[in-house]
Amino acid sequence: MPSREHLQKQIQRLSLTDKQALQIWLSKEIKRDMRPPAVEPATGREVVETTQAGRITYQSELVKCGKANCCCATGEKLHGPYWYGYRQKNERLKSWYIGKSLKLMDETEAADVEST
Image (cartoon, rainbow, N blue to C red; front, top):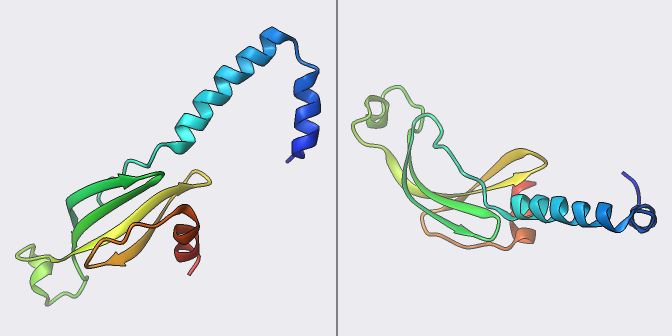
């Protein structure tokens, strides 16, 4: 990836019309990047509540544990609800478990949790 200084020099060489077109395009890209992700529930999960803060989507979900003899296997009763956080990172949807109660996180905290 080119350095910021290199990009700035390249942009300075553009015509006013090209700079304006670049500004419009860049504005759209920034808006897209700032949008929290739309999250479809995973198989075996049921969304109870959704909230968004910044670029993070939080969902309270009822879940199946995966044990064959559990009451959730028949769909009788799911476990939870439990909170999960979701955000886009490099075109991929990243998720993490939060717990029984919602704890909002900033971008740095979310990145730390994702990496563990």
